[in-house]
Amino acid sequence: MLVEALLALAATGSSAIVQAAGTDAWNGMRDGIARVLGRGEAAREQGELERLDRTRAVLEAASVDEAERVRTAQTALWQSRLEMLLEELPDTQRQQAAAELQALLRQAGMADGSQPARNDFSGSTFEKSAVQGSGTQHNTFN
Image (cartoon, rainbow, N blue to C red; front, top):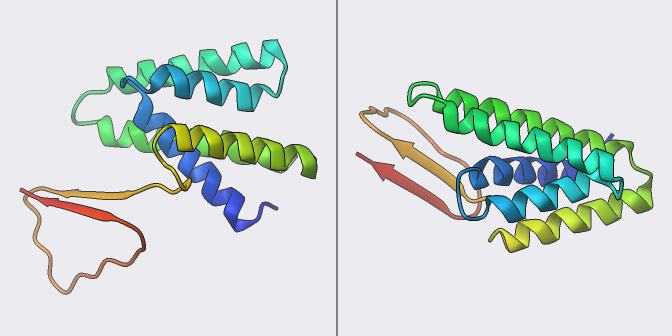
Protein backbone atom coordinates (compact mmCIF):
# COMPACT_ATOMS: atom_id res chain seq x y z
CA MET A 1 0.00 0.00 0.00
CA LEU A 2 1.35 3.39 -0.94
CA VAL A 3 1.66 6.16 1.58
CA GLU A 4 -0.48 9.25 1.15
CA ALA A 5 2.39 11.38 -0.19
CA LEU A 6 3.07 8.93 -3.02
CA LEU A 7 -0.63 8.71 -3.88
CA ALA A 8 -0.75 12.51 -4.04
CA LEU A 9 2.35 12.52 -6.24
CA ALA A 10 0.71 10.06 -8.65
CA ALA A 11 -2.43 12.22 -8.76
CA THR A 12 -0.42 15.37 -9.43
CA GLY A 13 1.66 13.60 -12.07
CA SER A 14 -1.40 12.32 -13.89
CA SER A 15 -2.98 15.76 -13.91
CA ALA A 16 0.24 17.27 -15.24
CA ILE A 17 0.30 14.76 -18.09
CA VAL A 18 -3.23 15.63 -19.16
CA GLN A 19 -2.68 19.37 -18.73
CA ALA A 20 0.49 19.28 -20.82
CA ALA A 21 -1.13 17.52 -23.80
CA GLY A 22 -1.46 19.96 -26.67
CA THR A 23 0.82 22.58 -25.09
CA ASP A 24 4.46 23.56 -25.52
CA ALA A 25 5.24 21.57 -22.36
CA TRP A 26 4.13 18.29 -23.94
CA ASN A 27 7.43 17.02 -25.35
CA GLY A 28 9.29 17.49 -22.07
CA MET A 29 6.47 15.95 -20.03
CA ARG A 30 6.05 13.07 -22.51
CA ASP A 31 9.75 12.18 -22.53
CA GLY A 32 10.10 12.56 -18.76
CA ILE A 33 7.10 10.40 -17.91
CA ALA A 34 8.25 7.73 -20.37
CA ARG A 35 11.67 7.69 -18.68
CA VAL A 36 10.15 7.40 -15.20
CA LEU A 37 7.80 4.59 -16.23
CA GLY A 38 10.35 2.87 -18.47
CA ARG A 39 12.85 2.51 -15.60
CA GLY A 40 15.83 2.31 -17.94
CA GLU A 41 14.37 -0.29 -20.29
CA ALA A 42 14.21 1.00 -23.88
CA ALA A 43 11.28 -1.23 -24.89
CA ARG A 44 9.20 -0.19 -21.88
CA GLU A 45 10.03 3.46 -22.49
CA GLN A 46 8.94 3.14 -26.13
CA GLY A 47 5.68 1.55 -25.03
CA GLU A 48 5.03 4.43 -22.64
CA LEU A 49 5.77 6.97 -25.39
CA GLU A 50 3.16 5.25 -27.54
CA ARG A 51 0.61 5.31 -24.68
CA LEU A 52 1.32 9.00 -24.11
CA ASP A 53 0.86 9.72 -27.82
CA ARG A 54 -2.50 7.91 -27.73
CA THR A 55 -3.51 9.99 -24.73
CA ARG A 56 -2.72 13.21 -26.56
CA ALA A 57 -4.60 12.02 -29.66
CA VAL A 58 -7.68 11.07 -27.60
CA LEU A 59 -7.64 14.43 -25.79
CA GLU A 60 -7.28 16.37 -29.02
CA ALA A 61 -10.03 14.38 -30.76
CA ALA A 62 -12.57 14.94 -27.97
CA SER A 63 -15.50 17.16 -28.83
CA VAL A 64 -16.34 20.12 -26.63
CA ASP A 65 -19.21 18.15 -25.11
CA GLU A 66 -17.04 15.20 -24.12
CA ALA A 67 -13.77 17.01 -23.34
CA GLU A 68 -14.18 17.04 -19.55
CA ARG A 69 -15.17 13.37 -19.40
CA VAL A 70 -12.20 12.41 -21.59
CA ARG A 71 -9.80 14.52 -19.47
CA THR A 72 -11.10 12.85 -16.31
CA ALA A 73 -10.76 9.36 -17.80
CA GLN A 74 -7.22 10.02 -19.05
CA THR A 75 -6.20 11.50 -15.70
CA ALA A 76 -7.52 8.40 -13.91
CA LEU A 77 -5.70 6.12 -16.36
CA TRP A 78 -2.34 7.83 -15.80
CA GLN A 79 -2.87 8.06 -12.05
CA SER A 80 -3.41 4.32 -11.97
CA ARG A 81 -0.26 3.69 -14.06
CA LEU A 82 1.86 5.90 -11.80
CA GLU A 83 0.43 4.35 -8.63
CA MET A 84 1.11 0.82 -9.96
CA LEU A 85 4.69 1.75 -10.78
CA LEU A 86 5.33 3.23 -7.35
CA GLU A 87 3.65 0.33 -5.59
CA GLU A 88 5.55 -2.39 -7.48
CA LEU A 89 9.05 -0.97 -7.07
CA PRO A 90 11.34 -1.92 -4.18
CA ASP A 91 11.68 0.89 -1.64
CA THR A 92 14.96 2.36 -2.93
CA GLN A 93 13.77 2.36 -6.54
CA ARG A 94 10.40 3.75 -5.42
CA GLN A 95 12.12 6.69 -3.76
CA GLN A 96 14.23 7.28 -6.87
CA ALA A 97 11.16 7.18 -9.16
CA ALA A 98 9.30 9.55 -6.82
CA ALA A 99 12.24 11.97 -6.87
CA GLU A 100 12.38 11.82 -10.68
CA LEU A 101 8.65 12.48 -10.90
CA GLN A 102 8.89 15.40 -8.46
CA ALA A 103 11.74 16.91 -10.50
CA LEU A 104 9.66 16.56 -13.66
CA LEU A 105 6.73 18.31 -11.98
CA ARG A 106 9.01 21.15 -10.85
CA GLN A 107 10.16 21.57 -14.46
CA ALA A 108 6.51 21.64 -15.53
CA GLY A 109 5.89 24.58 -13.21
CA MET A 110 4.53 22.75 -10.19
CA ALA A 111 7.48 23.75 -8.04
CA ASP A 112 6.37 22.03 -4.84
CA GLY A 113 4.83 19.06 -6.62
CA SER A 114 1.32 20.23 -5.83
CA GLN A 115 -1.43 20.91 -8.28
CA PRO A 116 -3.29 24.20 -8.21
CA ALA A 117 -7.05 23.87 -7.90
CA ARG A 118 -9.10 25.46 -10.64
CA ASN A 119 -12.84 25.81 -10.68
CA ASP A 120 -14.66 27.28 -13.66
CA PHE A 121 -18.37 27.93 -13.22
CA SER A 122 -20.72 28.98 -15.99
CA GLY A 123 -24.44 29.55 -15.53
CA SER A 124 -24.47 27.93 -12.09
CA THR A 125 -26.56 28.72 -9.03
CA PHE A 126 -25.14 28.02 -5.59
CA GLU A 127 -27.12 27.83 -2.37
CA LYS A 128 -25.62 26.89 0.97
CA SER A 129 -22.40 25.78 -0.76
CA ALA A 130 -18.98 25.38 0.75
CA VAL A 131 -15.57 24.73 -0.79
CA GLN A 132 -12.79 23.27 1.28
CA GLY A 133 -9.18 22.94 0.31
CA SER A 134 -5.73 24.38 0.63
CA GLY A 135 -3.39 26.20 -1.68
CA THR A 136 -4.31 28.63 -4.41
CA GLN A 137 -7.79 28.53 -5.81
CA HIS A 138 -9.00 30.43 -8.87
CA ASN A 139 -12.73 30.78 -9.44
CA THR A 140 -14.11 32.17 -12.67
CA PHE A 141 -17.79 33.07 -12.73
CA ASN A 142 -19.35 33.79 -16.13
